[in-house]
Picture 1: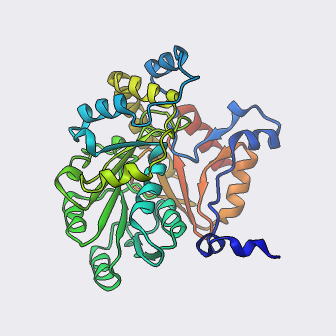
Picture 2: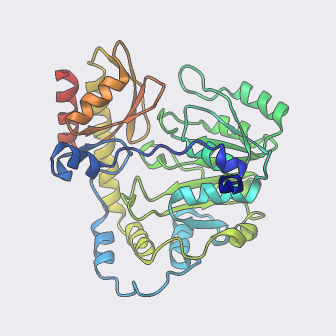
Length: 358
């Protein structure tokens, strides 16, 4: 008997998510120490978490207990920080969990979701996991949203969700207030991913979710707070959705360690401000250095990464050459686009030395 026939059709036909090369795997392949790898492929904060977060982790005495399933203390602290009512705030194992829960909550098989590529691939992944149909509306050449095409697509396809990201991953550009107003006027749910908003110099629109019945705003501790390894994200949801979201959210996805570190991080704003400033300064330096390379075309960015287009070179050969030197960047298969995370100054220097040498 062919038991693969038992697999849901939506899963059987789903393309797997392609993970990046794990830096310790590359280190073993090259015979190097993991700390020698220049890891700039995942938009991580290279300066590490707040000392307050590290102290909170070191002093934990409750690892034998299950975490608070409602993350009450962390949600209360976030409510005070954001001005969003407590009952509209949710915390998840990274904003990835909240993206998945949103799809699970709203999508039936055959429903339509709209995305604007190039953008974060997990939007389409979660929609397809639910059996939804994904309609792509490509961005303009400058990577701005094609608002007219999006509005026409919504009128034609009657989708349930439109996923947007500001600053957008991987292009690094912003959605203006006026454009977000146009999107939220459409008859569907808009999910605004603000994973990189802290590096943009603009204000979060998380409070907009309080005023609008169809807007969900997601944020994360992975990037700005350097807690990617602990998986903590949060989001503001319309009040009408909140009771239903609790029904489907698994209770213990945010660990004791993750909650403690996130709480401590919120109490150390000075360290985080210093991190922002260092990352933004290094982003500007990285962009200026990349502009000098004849075979890379960098784009302006308001995030903690820079997108470049490879010209007159084979991207696959470039990736292999960089990995042979212990350097990891995010290459997009079938495209000539490469995303370079902002690292420490010495990592930028190491990257540039290799890019010029090869």
